[in-house]
Length: 122
Length: 110
Image (cartoon, rainbow over all chains, first blue to last red; front, top):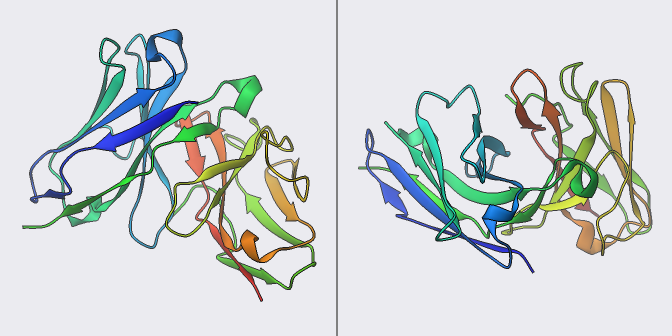
């Protein structure tokens, strides 16, 4: 059973950097698949942030690209998100998830973490 | 503003059939398959339908999907109270090189 768990500060000050980590269990990241971050502002819809492959290859949402870095540490079976220069608009529940393959999930996110609320406030 | 367009709300009574629409463009729904997610209150989204009309293991066959051109729809038959949730459509977007989501439809079971 694949499980994902997000961790990181729940409160970040404006203009600072938001940092989150997603630990994966039940599957080795080095075995394949893309791994991604999605966020959901309170009461709003889902927004894709970016994805990373085990090799380190990434793809980011153009609207966030200038502020986002996603990295992977296969030795710890985890991947991480950094979002710089945050504002109140970045307040959201942040989810990590596995992007399944074309045949098994139609390139959908088939396993999700429980999500972690990050509030940007001074 | 979301890339894919969904109605903000839908409703039905137990046993009814309801449909939720999703419209996009040639760079997403028009050229890739569509997925649907169900998000129960206070929980993470769950993949409900993938590749237009396929159900992951454990999803009841009351849920079905279809796609035509740059639009898609999710149908729920035999509506049950536990189906009350937010539903999101999603598709890969070739222009963005990533997935895009609809704004979500809140389904109320009356």
